[in-house]
Length: 336
Image 1 (cartoon, rainbow, N blue to C red):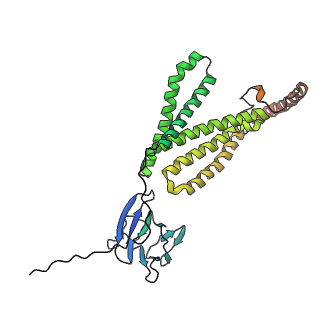
Image 2 (spheres, one colour):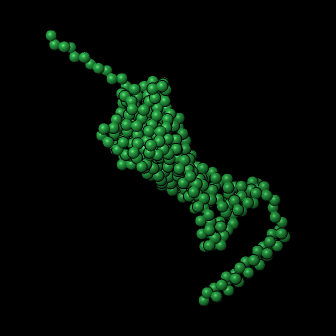
Image 3 (spheres, rainbow, N blue to C red):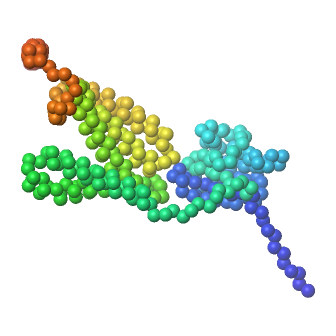
């Protein structure tokens, strides 16, 4: 009689997974025994294709006396391993908490233990009515804002109606092209296009910019704050920086903190540089010489200036301007 072959079952103790910087799965290996080695060498339990990972980078073991504790030993590597922003060099040992990734070079490791609790099943996503509604409302508001600005600038109704189709097509094309470029970047650095999310970000940025500009000019008119009207472009720069951060955070969600610091540094360095260039070229910080936006007089809160005081201030201003012209004329003669 021939012997009946027996099959041996292997118990899966866990699962170790490797992801790239954008969250895409690179490799996965079941854990059937302890310890487990990770590296580029073919005899490792989890083989990685990362040039910044050593041939045998990590040894992962589970303590016998503490079955819930997972210990990691950093092997022969010059780059080490990072856990929760703490760098561990060659020869160091540390505990690996559940649900916390380890960074090796450009690779992120995650560990799932067989006895770890499993999350509940999630319901299938329904049609995103709320997201679609939000996108539609933002797009309609952007179109209405563009129509309102065009109406205020039009000379007559016939000219406005004639330019209306081109305005609508231009607005849709600009928003679509802008969101499309960010979607391509999202696909290159991630796994999804996220086109409609970028559309919402662009529309929200346009609406916020229009609102901030309107409120700044209206407040300047109501309370006679000329400086607020002159520095309104600085507020536009802040809105643009916020929109760029939102786009970049969508493309690189794992780099949100670094992107926030980078965008803050650009604003803190760029705005003073721009104001300095304004001062060197025009001898003033703002773009406007006076408040160019006028509103109904009933909205004016600041008291009116008497005619006599206005004439006195104009005479004083004329004296300062004459001295400035004389100084400029003398400076031109010295240059010649």
